Amino acid sequence: MSVEIYRWFLKIPILISVLFFFVFPYFLNKGIKLSTPNRFIRFMILVFSCLLVFAFVTWLMTYWMEELSKDLLLVKMGVNTDSFIHEEMFEQVPPKYLAQAKEIHESQMGIGWPLKAMFTYIFLVLPSSVVYCLMLVFVDKIHLNKS
Image 1 (spheres, helix red, strand yellow):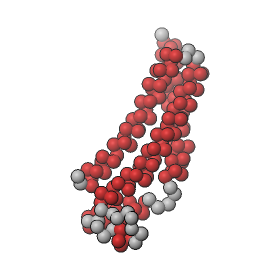
Image 2: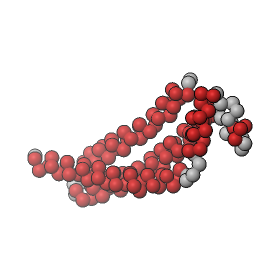
Image 3: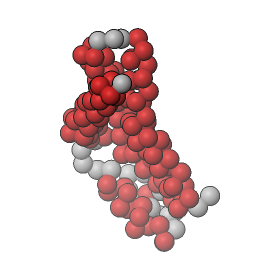
Image 4: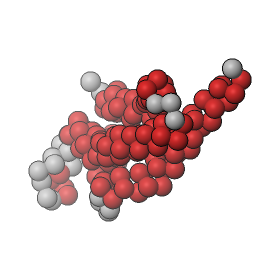
């Protein structure tokens, strides 16, 4: 399998997780609506359960995107990950992938994936999931007022 096809396969879990972020609250809201008549309690259950599940999914996806998929791609390109010497590390890499392999290897330096996961959760997932849950509750409220 070529590196380009392998790179596309590595993006599939990311697409699935983005789809999960939109589908999970909708079905959770439908299930909570059947069992809890109070709207405020339903909203609180929806938000807190989404935040807990999304924290776990964000943690997994950040590890996948920042660490594991890059390591798998470097191994597929022929990088010797056990070596500490730069020249020895890239000597098995074909010339057409050498620049990409060095760029991916250098992108792994810096802050680690746990810190990136925390920033992603605090600044991206937390606000968007609260807004999405609010939208679901308001749409339900509009549907209740119409009927």
